[in-house]
Amino acid sequence: MEYFNRQKMWGKRKNSTIRALRNIRIGLLLLFLLVHGGGTCGPGTTNKVRPIGRKVGMKQTQRLPDAEESSAAASGSSEGPVRRGSPKYKALKVEINTDVIFKEDGETNDNKRMTPRCAEKLKNLIRGVIRQWDGRVKVRVIKAYYAGKEKRKRRHPLTLHYEGRAIDIQTSDLDQKKYPILGRLAVNAGFDWVSYSSKNYIHASVRAIGPDLETKPAQTGCFHSNSSVRLQSGMTVLMKDLKIGDRVATLDDHGKITYNPVIMFFHRNLNLRSKYLIISTLNHNDKKLVITPTHLIYRLNQQTQQASVVYANQLAVGDYIYIRNTSHPHDHSVGMRRITSISASELSGVFAPLTETGNILVEDIVVSCYAVFPSETISHWTMFPVRFLARIFPNFFNTEDEIPWYPRMLFQFYSNVRKWIGNP
Image (cartoon, rainbow, N blue to C red; front, side):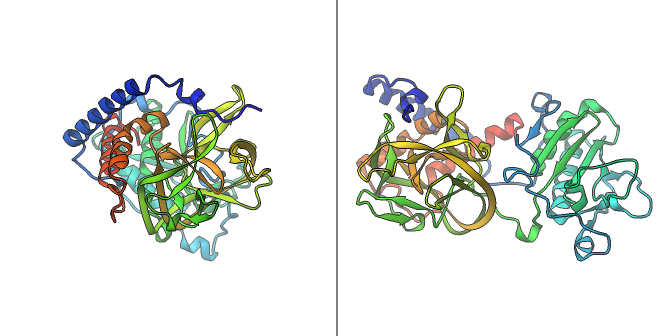
């Protein structure tokens, strides 16, 4: 088995002086861009769905996220059909809106029935469609809640239409050339899963939660407050009790466990609720990694047999991730464990520490300190000013701010760039 080797992911390191100068240039360039171009809006989410270009429309057969609809990374599993007259049926919302067209379905109004969360995302989509095509086109809903009594069609017994958690949509002019953009607008509107599997319509669905349980997404990738990390003393400490300067288990460029100080927290909020994935592995003493979906983690690439960096929501049962080797107390290497289950939950408490190496062992599982932006390498480069300042002034970023000023500017810049190019 080949050991975890970060040099093979990042490429061979050059002379340290040249690398430092390069990182300084990159850091200064990003800081310049942030100061001059990142002040238009703060980090976080918005209900505005901006117009997007044709180049970023969905492709035929594409699904976002690229996972099964019933998976934890998407809309989650079915809770069972909702029968007419039941309390859950009465809780469905009948959407009345002149800016959307509903396909006639008799006197039941079923095509207007959906969960409050689905209705909320539909409203976001309506605003996006109006803005995209200057009010000339409306959303057309051809299927929402489905009671399962139509004989002309047979749907999968676990379809989320039975619960009012899914809609099938078109544009009012039935122009199929617009559907790739319509699909992307649905993603931007906040639907938890969008599929362009049929050329005739876009399918979109949501999780089984209502607006009363809606959470504010963590503006960074985070770990739950009760996650544990290992200190140099051998003791473990909960994430919520971790402090700037604590030396925690990390991984060096050769795949060996070493201990480095925490130099900053990207995000720290004990009360904020966020969506988490709960990842279990084989023979890991019942330890579970609780991590936000857009946090970066290391996964074994089955083709190259090397570590690769992916979002947590790209993991699947059967994948291998890297875990501290516990067979020998003084062993500083890591091994691999197979993922046995992935579930989703909403929990309070978000913490995202940064170490000098850019990675950390949480529940003895090797994870990146970085999130949201897909490139760990670029993320690590942009944190050079933080590492530089922390070496001179160890407590420079030891503030009470939920998100320190430097990562906050980075989030602003990244958010502005994504909006400018039309990505969600």
